[in-house]
Length: 273
Image (cartoon, rainbow, N blue to C red; front, side, top):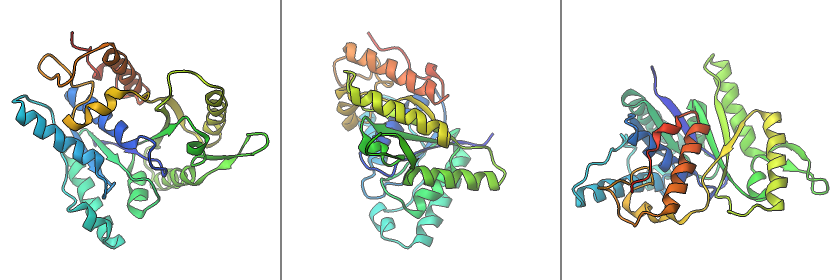
């Protein structure tokens, strides 16, 4: 079977694409899946840097941690300044290499609309779009009436996904599964969230995406980044921070996320004692 390509996309920066890509990739790795990563955020490279940290931490602490394949696309800054033809050639070559060695290919995309980002979306089997608890984020998906707050029409990013789906259908491929995740939610419920959830549900029926849970705004998701670790990695041998009840709750969230993506809730082990 060919690799399952997961694209983490949203044209708005700061929505949590890299955080989700990191956690999904690690959960799959820790479950014994073969994973490849492509970091298309050529300047920032949060996904690539995370796994560099992971390799360095594992070596420095003499522990074994599963690593993804990471096809070389060359220097990110140089490639970001290259012409479109060069970028597309590097991307297509890297994607072919990733498909050849992995069960899952996780692709992190930058905020903004670029040719290489559109190519990644067209290659996706699954598009994962994180959205923060804000109408600012929703505006990338759909426009609302300023008086009634009713959804008027799909917005820029929804059109990008629509084009990717149309290209896939014209090529006779399997339909792209699109899921929008409510990400970085505050613990307390709010009237704004209820209004937002209602508009997301209405837009989902209109343009055809699924809605699922993302990750709450927890310190644990950020404090493990310098080590190249996630809550799915923590064990008796891998414990750079003290384990608390917050880790147990974070693992439950990870299980919910993997289940929503149809990647298996069992990919996230129980918290170490």
